[in-house]
Length: 286
Image (cartoon, rainbow, N blue to C red; front, side, top):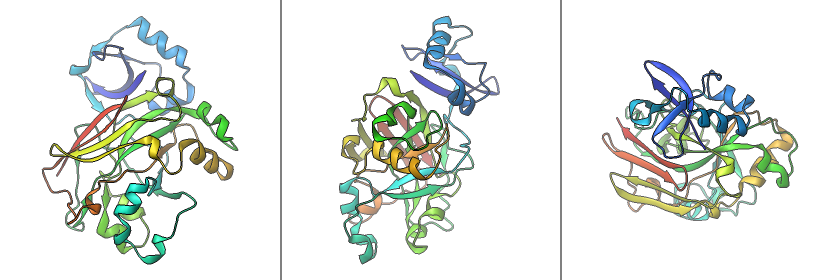
C-alpha cells in the first residue's frame, strides 16, 4: 500500500493511493504522517481504501514529501555499497582506505524535506561540488529498543526514496559530514511510503539515479554491505528508534564525485532517483 502526504485545496493531509494508482483516499482521522505511523494498523488502511470516501484524482493533488518535517534528524549510512567505497577512495585520506568492518553512521538535519518535483537549492555561493545519492530509506513503525535481527521486520512501517544531496567540498573540508549533508533542500524524499508488507524482506530492489536522462547509478539493494536487519538491530541496542524514525541505507556507485573527471550537479539539472516497487523521485537543481 502506498501512503502519501499531499496538498489539496490548500490543505496538507495524508492519504492512501488506490491500487490502480489513479486516486487518493484521504485519511482524515490522522493529522499528519507521523501520527498515522504511530497509531495506524494496516487493516485500518485497507478499510479506508475500501470505503473510498472523498477520493480525489492523483492528478488533482500536489505530492509532498511523505514525512515533510521529520521529528528527528535522519540516520544515514555512509559508504554502504562496495562499489561506492571503491569509486571514492581517492577522495579521502589514507585512514579511510582501511577495510570497514562496522557501519558508518551519520545524521542529516532536515528542516523540511523537498517534495517530489520540488527544487534543490544548490547553495552555489558556498558549494562547488553538488552531488546526488539515490538511497532506500526505511521508516520505523513502532519504538524499537534491543531488537534482535530476527525481529527487525516487525518494526518496519515501510520504505521510501531519499536523495542524500551532498556538498562534497564542504563534506571533505570539515572531516565530518553533517554540514555538507544538511543544508536546506538537501533531502528530497518520496514520492510516498510503500508499506513493508508490499516488499519482501530483506529488500532486493533495483535502485538507480539519472541526471538529465543519463543513467548514473544502477544497482540493487541486495548489495548493501550492512543489511537493514543488522543496522536496525545494532542501533536499537544503544538507542530507542522512535516510530517515524527514518534510516537512509546508503548509495551505490555512480555518484558525480566518483566519475573521472568528477561531474557535479549544475543549476537546471533534472535528477531522478528510482527504486523498484516504490517509484521515482524527480527534482530540479536551482
